[in-house]
Image (tube, helix red, strand yellow):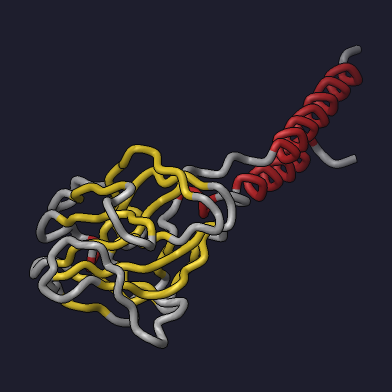
Length: 215
C-alpha cells in the first residue's frame, strides 16, 4: 500500500496541474517570449485589432516597457471599438516602475469593460519620444480567449488618437505598444470537485492508519 507521504505528494502534483490550467488568465493577453524588433518612440498611436472568443472583461491596460526597468515617461493607452469613436476604456501609465510589471508590460487598472464575441476592438498606446514598442508576429503566447487580427496605427503626428489604419500583410501581427489583461478564469467546478475528492481520500487513508495503529 502506498505511504501517506507518497499519496500526499501525488495529490500535491495533481493540485499543481489543476491550478496550471488557467495561469494565462492572469497574464498580459500577448505575453512576449522574445523581442524580435523594437520601434523608437513616434508622435502617433500604435496598436492592434482583435476579437474575443468568449464573453470577457478587461480589467487593466498596459504599455510596453523596453528593458523592463521602468517607463521613461507617462504613456496613454486606450481601448476602442474597431469602428472608432470615444475609447471604451483608457488610462495613463505612470513613468518609472510604479505600475505593475507583467512580462514586458506595465499595467494600470481600468473600470471593468465587457468584450463581446463577434465584435472587433482595437487597443493602442501613444508613443512619444520617450517610449518604444515591440512588434508581435508570433514571438509570444496569446491568451486563448483572444484572436489577434492585424496591426494598427494612427496618422503620424496625431498624438494619442484612434489607430484605425493598417497595412496589407499585417494580419496576425500587433504593435506593442498597448496591451491588456482580462479577468482571471476561475478553476472549473469539476476540478474543484476532483480536488475535494483527493483531499477526502487522503483524509480517509490517514484515519484508517490511525485506527489500525491503535492497540
